[in-house]
Amino acid sequence: MAKQNQETQTQEPGSLGSNPQPLTNFKYSNRVQLKSLFLNRNDGGAEFIGQTVVVGGWVKSSKEVEISSPPPPPSSTAAENEAPAKDVSCVEIFQSRIPLIRNIMEVLGGNSYVSRKKLRDSPIPTPLPPKSSTAYLLLTDGSCVATLQVVVESSIATPSRLLATGTCIIVEGRLERPSAEGKHAIQLKAEKVLHIGTVDVGKYPLSKKRVPLDMLRDYAHFRPRTTTVATVMRVRSALSFATHSFFKDHAFFDVQVPTITTTDTEGFSNMFQVTTTGNQKADKEKLSTIYETEGVNLETMKEAVKEKSKLVETLKRSESNKEALAAAIQDLHKTNELALQLEGREKKKFGTSLKHDRVDSSEDFFSTKTYLTVSGRLHLESFASALGNVYSFGPRFQADKTDSAKHAAEMWMVEAEMAFAELKDSMNCANDLFKHLCKWVLENHSDDVKFVGKRIDNTCIERLRQIISGSPQLISYNEALDVLRKAEDKKSEAKFDSGARLTSDHLSYLADAIYKQPIIIHSYPKEAKPFYVRVNDDKTVAAFDLIVPKVGTIISGSQNEDRLTMISSRMTELGLPREKYEWYLDLCRNGTVKHAGFTLNFDLMVLFMTGLSNVRDVIPFPRSYGKANN
Image (cartoon, rainbow, N blue to C red):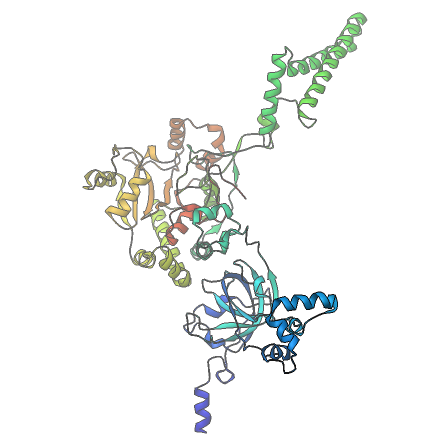
C-alpha cells in the first residue's frame, strides 16, 4: 500500500491518477482556445498534460530540427570497390597503371570493351531516404498573450509548409511536458494536421521581424496578428464591455443617437457634409461654363421651353387668334429642337447618366444640408428629459486637417446625459467611470496589462493603481492660468491671457510636469466652450475637463443651459442659424429640467491604458487626413 501511495505521488500533473479537469472546446468550433490552457493558471497549463485536444492558430515563429540517423551499412558494391580483386590479370594491371596501354586496348576492343575497373567505379546509385525532421511552432490564436509550442514531425506534415510566419494551422495532438526546460510548461505533440493555410512569404508584410507600428498602419487588415496590436485590441474590447457594465449598474439606458444630423452640436466644428450630388454638381457647373462660353445656356433654353409651352396652352384655350397660336407652336418646336441638340452634345461629352437640372439641396437625398455627427449630447438631452439617465457609445467625426497623434477623423465617444443633475454630479460620474475602467482592465486582463508593462510602458501598472486609489486634483480655469504663469520651468512660452483656450501643450504640462497625476479643470470662460453650456453668475460656464498624464484631455463635460433666454442669447452671439436648432430649443420651452453630462473619448482612453503614443495605433481601422486605405 505504501508503494502504491508513493507511485501516486510521483505521477505527473494531468496523469490519470490526478483526475485532471477536462478542457472544454469553444462552443462554436471544435477546438480549445489557448486562454483555456494558460489564463489564471500558476502551473502554465501543466495540469492538462496527457489530454488530447484540437487547437488552431497562426504561426508566430518557428524552427526546424533535423533528426540525426546512423549511417547506412556498406553495400556489396562498395565492398567490391574497396577490396582488391583476386583474379586480376597482367593486362588489367598494365591498363590501370599505364594510361597509354589502356587507350590502345580501348581502340582495339571498340565499343564492346569495358574494363572491370570502370564497371566497379560506376555502381547503380542507391536512392537516399528522405530526411527526417521536427518542426517547432509557436502558435497564437489571439485569445491571450501566451503562445503554445506545437511539435510536428515531418512524417505527419511537410515542415516547409508550416514554418512561414502567419501560416494558419489546425492541429490535433496530445499535451505533454517539453523534453527541455524552458519558458513553456507544456507543448502539443501533433498527431494530425487538419488544416494548413499557407502565406506568400514574399508579399506577406509580417514575414519581417519587428515591423514598426507606423508601417503597420498601411496593413490594418494584418496588424492584429502582431502581439502588440492584438493585446491593444483585447484591452479595447475589455474597456468597451466595462463601459456598458458601468452604465447598466448605475441605471442608465443605452440610446443610439443619429450618425447623420443637421445640427452642429459644438457650434464651431469642422464637419463632413453628407451628399449624393457632389460629383453631379461639379459636372453641371462645368457644362454651364461651356455653354455660356459658346453663347448658349442650357438652363435658359429649358426655361424658354416652359414659358412657350404655357403660351401655347393659353392661346389654345382662348381660340381667338389662330395665327398667333400657329406662330407660337412653330416657335416652341424650334426651341425644343435647339434644346434637344444641346442635350445631344451634353450626352456626347459627359454620358447619358448626367442630369441637367440645376443642383440644390432639394434635389439631394435629404432636403436640407446634413453632416456626420460631431457629438450626440444634444440628441441625448431629449431622451434624458424622458428617461432620466441615458448614454450613447459610437463613432463621431471631425474633418480637421491635422496630423496630431491624438486625433483621427473617426473616433469613438462615450456620451452620458443625466436629468435633475448639476455640474458636480457630472464630474463625479465621469470620475467614477474613469476609475471603473482602469480597475476592470487591471483586475480582469492582468496578462495583457503585464505585457503592456513589459513591452510598451513599464509605468502602466503602477499608474493604474494610483488612479484607482486616488482622486484627480480639482482646480479652476483661473487657478490653472496662475500655475502656468508662475511655473519656474518655462517649457511653454505661450501668453496666458484670461479667456484664452488652453492648448493640449498647456494641459499636458499641468498633468505631466506640475501635478503629475490626473487633474480636473472647471469653470471655463464661455468663449472656450459650446453654446449650450450653462453660464454661471460670474460669467464663467459650468464645464470641466479631466486631463491625464501623457494623453491630455480624456473627458469633457458640463451642466447644460436650461434657460431659454440665455441659450437664445448665446446662439445670437455665435451667429448660429436658429432654424437648425428649433427642435433643441423646444426642450427648453416644454418641461425643461436641470441636466448635465459628459463625453469620454474612448480611443484616447485605450491610448492611456496601453501607453502608446499615437491614437491611430489603438483604432482597428484608423481614418485620418488623406488616409483611408481599407
